[in-house]
Amino acid sequence: MKLSTCSAALFLSFMVVSSLSAQSAGEEKQEFGVTVGQLSGTSPGVAGGPLTLDSGVAVEANFARKVRELGFGNLYWEVDGLVGPIRYVTGTPTTATHSINSVFLTPGVKLQFTPKEPLSPWVAVGGGYGFYHSSNSSIAGGTAAGGTTNTYAVDFGGGMDWAMNKHYVIRADFRGFYTGAPNYGINVPGGQFNFVIGGGLVWRFSK
Image (cartoon, rainbow, N blue to C red; front, side, top):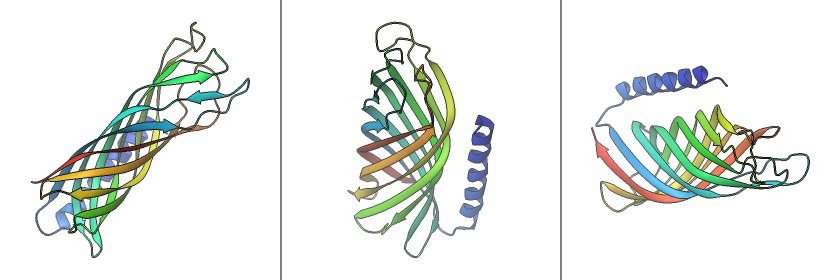
């Protein structure tokens, strides 16, 4: 998926949700959350031996805007962003890159259940942009054919919100991101599945 297609999808989703917002009665609700967790992923299948992409710490930021109240919950338009500063690559072949950084930006929709209760489960899905930076240092300590990769990202997940009061919420969540393969410095077939399990704080506010 080209970046121009991702940008068009982001713009289209925003326009559709803005139209829904205009039709919704009542005050619009918004929220901003930050969570911290462990980013893990599938390891690539390559010829010459096992190659492992280790886990690493990730920081996730999420902005969501309520667009409609449903009989069983609330519908939100959201933008989810995740930064994974560094994950190490180990195994063979040792000519592969030694570390990979990750950034995902995925607009989408979120469905929140039992919004008036202290505990509110939710599910989300979206799609957008994925970015990887691979180091030019190999596992063996030599030079690797690293570099940057711009690709698509498909996002899905769910979680649980615990409302401490009207404005502050504790969140536990799971997110999965399926993308094109990062540049491992060697030929790697197929895509890359990443997932993060984390927790953090959400601030809810009204416009």
